[in-house]
Amino acid sequence: MENKTMARAGSLKLLGLTVSPFVVRVRMALQLKGLGYEYIEQDLFIKGDLLLMSNPVHKKVPVLIHDGKPICESLAIMQYIDEVWAATGPSILPADPYERADARFWAAYADSKLLPAWVGIMWAATEEERVEKVEDTLKAIGHLEEAFGKCSNGKPFFAGDSVGYLDLVLGSQLLWFEALQKMFGVVVIEEGKAPLLAAWVKRFGETDTAKEVVPDVDTAVEYLKKLQSHRAGATVAQLLS
Amino acid sequence: MAEPVKLIGCFGSPFVHRVEVALRLKGVPYELIEEDLNNKSDLLLKHNPFHQKVPVLLHGDRPAVCESLIIIEYIDEAFSGPSLLPSDPYERAMARFWAAFMYKCKDSMWIALWTDGEVQAASAREMKASLTLIERQLPEGKKFFGGDTIGFLDIAVGGIAHWMGVFKEIAGVHLLIEEEHPALCRWAREYILDETVGQCLPDRDRVVAALTRRKELYVSIAKAMAAQK
Image (cartoon, rainbow over all chains, first blue to last red; front, side, top):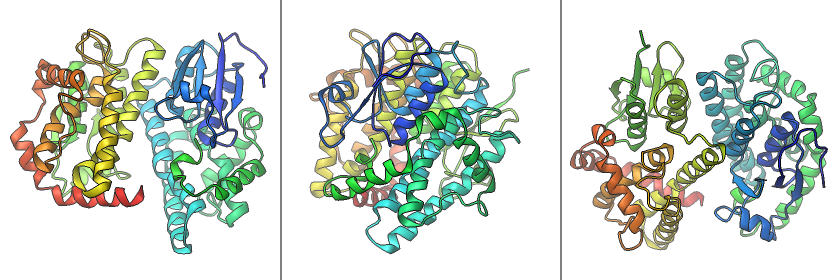
């Protein structure tokens, strides 16, 4: 599946899973920079040779292969794209060192506190556990709501006038919030409780970045159903990368 | 006049040590504020409300920078002086990948140190395999991951050099073994001998005493981690 090439980029391949937030954010970064690449969807149940060779340590997606060299870990990949193509398209990370540190902090927070919490909602074995995971998720969203107020400084996105690193990291998880609402009736970002984020979600959804990259929520729901039937033996961490 | 730099830390923490190494390599003077983690100060809670952990960096009037690896990248970008991260983007991505890998090892390491039985044994095997993978990243014929001088990855992995020995004494578990990881052990010796590292490496016996007092806490954290796996 070849994406349109808008900028000469050497040879770029991305090994991914359409619904993985870690992959979605990398595709968003590539889209922002206007980079063409060959996208190769992976079967995470039966991992192919290219994935195993390119990411022997974790055997996970995403893997960006640039002129034959693999780069792994979504946040490292995004920064790599930003650095190699610094002269192309908008910057993904801001220029100011403090703002960069702040974006990195909240991105790490979104991945280490928020993501495991909502994944936990999907895999809760009991109703009690589900309630606990919903509480953890909403608590993390509360902190991100605060962070939005500070980072955006009255502007439409975390990064300011247009999307950047933290918008992509959190934005790549939104598809699953929709899936959670559809499957469990859980509302992760509720206008009454997180009004700034609720407004940001709408704006983010209207960007070209989101429209061109994020798959339909039904794709996520179908994938979750597939995972549920394969659950035995899989850890939460293995599910989306 | 340079803006003052303060580092909120605590005695014996490898994460605080990392940041001190980074500041010293960049030639940035700083004031170290030592916390008692059993009695966290208002200063710490105000500046790191989300994680309530050390290290925390305060640079002039700016809001705090938290999380040791994020602080180190901040130090590299905000101050002049030798670069901690490599200049080539691919090498930078590799350094970040392996630093993230080190971070992911922490659960296995903790379970290997502070639990017992088959769970402990499996985690110990996993941790040793991880150390082998890290060892392979050492460039041929060079003292450090960064080459001839200490770089970002040396700092990220640096805790192993001193604290593996500390934990071996407290927990009685030996993970970094000469016969199994000769190159990594050689690196660890070079790291500890480095002059800049030596300036902020806490006395080993004092660290053993300080961390032994936290052993019960470590054991309960390790048990919770093992239950999650």
